[in-house]
Length: 276
Image (cartoon, rainbow, N blue to C red; front, side):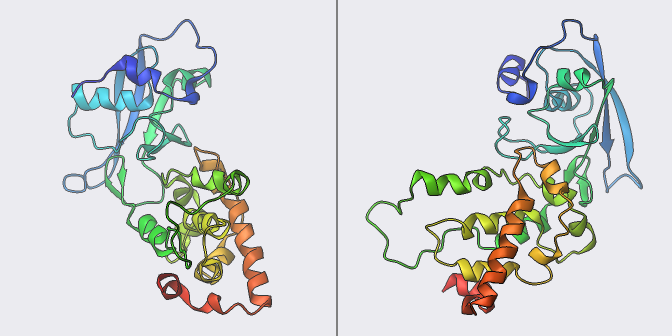
């Protein structure tokens, strides 16, 4: 496997914009979390000196280690365009996408080293790869697809630009799991749906084409849903796409109370009501 450095730099996204300092070090110190459950009793931090390359991203540095130093290093990636969310990591104390995070930007922030950790509070499978099973199970549980109860049109279910704009922010979520990892309620309550699943619920509740709004509210109306959120805004701060999960959850609370006051029957139907 080889890296097209020019292509990677060109596709690095907006995170590396602005002026780049003219003088850079010959090498960059990379500190990476390493843990192999089949071999290690406990985790360790490995240190690597990476030759400086203009336009290099944190994902590039991980590939450099994989290809030239240790082929056992495990990490996730896919699109390298900031779209798939696979390379979400905890980099220098912040949730970031490795493919979008320019090393130059980290240096301009006054960092002398790059610390790369897996997403916190999730079980580590190996090195930087975490177990996302609970995240995906919660996401699937809210039925993340349109529920239409009218006859299908010949081509598509139309939606005005104005109505689409209402959900643009939430459609833009790339399912990276950063918000789920950052949420204190998710750390302490294993049954809590988490900010991503509830934000996506709001995405469908506020979608004018969906016909199962009360049933969706019923999925998040319990103690493991919207009312478990303590609105500490960790999810908002962690999101690399600047999605406001907290605002979506507050919207769910308002809609749920409204549905309760009008005696909406759909609230008690649960997931079964979405599949009828």
